[in-house]
Image (cartoon, rainbow, N blue to C red):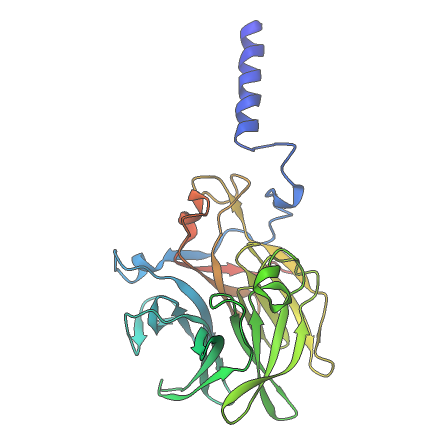
Length: 321
C-alpha cells in the first residue's frame, strides 16, 4: 500500500513539473478541444523539405494567395516564391540571395499589381517603410516610402491589404506594435492599421484604423481579406483575429479570436500546453473557410520547441460557425 501511495505521489510531482495540470497555468493558455479553436492543420511542411534545399534558411515573412497560387516573401531572400496550390510546382521570381527586409505581399486584382512592404529604409538619419509596386509580370514599376517615420528600423509595417472607396484605391498597412509604436508591444489590444493614399513621391497616411480590443495581441504580423472579412495574425500571441470592416465608417466589427493549436515540448499538437506555433509571420485566405500561414525562423531566445513549426507553410480550416 505504501508503495502505491509513493508511486502516486511521484506521478503527481512529475505532472506538475511538466505543467500538465499546474495551478499556475492560465486557463486561456491550456489546450482543450473547445479552447484551441484551430485544430490540426490539413497540411504543413518545412520550406527546406518542400524545395529540397537542406541548408537554405527560409525566414518567411508574408504570403498572399491568388489564382490558385501562393506568393511568399522572405526577409532573408530578395525574391518572391510562387507556389501552386497543390505544392507541386514552384519558381522564384527575380531571385536574389541578398537580404530583402520584405515583410508583406499583396495583390490587387482590379489594378493587377503586386505590392511588397520593405520593413525599413534609411532616408537621411531616419527610417521609413517602403512600398514596392510590380506589374503582374514582376516588373518593378514604383518604389515609394510610406511617409511614417519609424522609432526603430526593425519595428514597422508587418502586413498589407487594400480597399476601394468610391473608386479610389487605398492600401491598408498593418503596424507591428500596439499603438504603432515599438515600445508599446505589451499594451495588448491596441493594434492599428494605416489607411494609405498614393501621392506622387510617397504613400501618405490618410487615417488610422483601430483593430478591436478583442484582438488582445502582443503584436500583429499580417493581414488579408476575403470579401468583407478580414484576418489578422499575431506572432507573439500565436493567434488570429477575424472580423468585418464597415467601408463607410472604416470601423471593424468586434470579431473573434482563434488560437493556434498548442502542443508538447516535442512539437506534438494537442498533447501539451506549450506554444509551438511561435513564429507566424504571414496569413492569407485560400477560400472562405481555409487559410494558409507561413512561419519565420525561430530565434535563439525562444523556447527550443519553437523550432518544430519554424520556416514552414501551414494550411488550416477555419471552424464552421
